[in-house]
Image 1: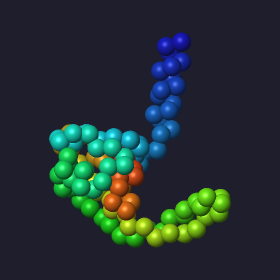
Image 2: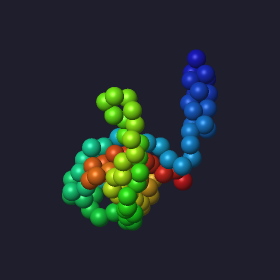
Image 3: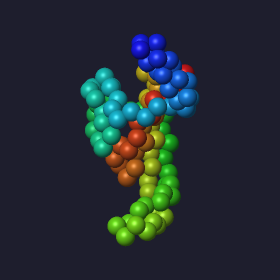
Image 4: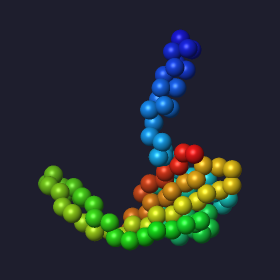
Amino acid sequence: MLRSISSLAFLVALLSPATGLADDRFRCRGGLVFVGDTIAEVTKKCGPPDSKREGYQTIEQELVTGATRLVRVWVTEWRYAPYGKFPRELMFRDGRLKRITREQR
C-alpha cells in the first residue's frame, strides 16, 4: 500500500507543470498574505516586490445570464524571490490579489 501511494505521489509530481504551482497563501517576513488581500495589505506584510509588471489585460467575464463579454482590467504582477526559497509571483487584478504562483527551480 505504501509503495503505491509513493508511486502515485511521484507520478503527480512528474506530471505537474514545471512553470509553477498555485497557492492560496504566501508567508512574508510580516505575516501571511492571502488571495483576496489588497496591494496595500501585501505591501505592509512583504514590503516592495523584487520586480513588478503592470498593464491592462482583456479577460472574459461571465454574466448572470450565462453569456460572456470581454472586459479590460488593470493587472499588476509582483515577484518576490526570497533567498533560499522558491520565488513567488503574485497577480493582482483591480488592486486585489487573485493568484499566487510558486515558481519551480
